Amino acid sequence: MAAFVMDASRAYYPFIHFVLLSTKLGSLVSTTALPSLSGRVLAAIELPLPSVPEQTAIATILSDMDTELAALQARRTKTQALKQAMMQELLTGRIRLI
Image (cartoon, rainbow, N blue to C red; front, side, top):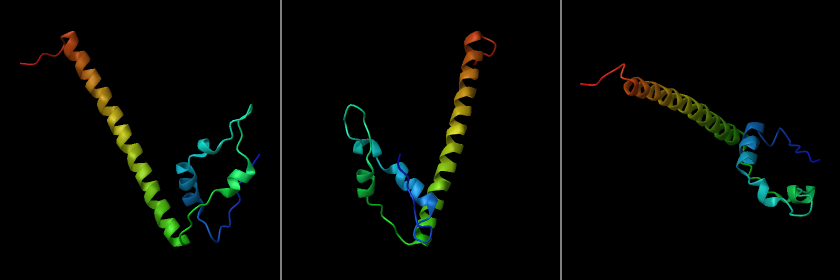
C-alpha cells in the first residue's frame, strides 16, 4: 500500500491529478515474480510544482478541455449513429436518392 499526501498550501489537487494521469507509472514497476511499485520509487518521482495560482489555471484549462472532448465525442457518436440509420434506410430501399 502506498499513499500520496500533499500539502494543500503548495499544491492544487486537480493539478496533481492531471500530472499523475500523465505520469507513466507502469514503466516504474519492478518486474519480479509479483510486479510491484515500491515506496522508494514513488518517493523518487519529481513533480513540477508551479505556483498555486498557475496550478489552478492549468488544471482549469485541462478540465475544460476534457469537458469539450467529451462533448465532441458524444456528438461524433450521435453523428455516426445517424449516418448508420440513414445508410440502413438507403439499403432497405425505403429512401431513394434521385
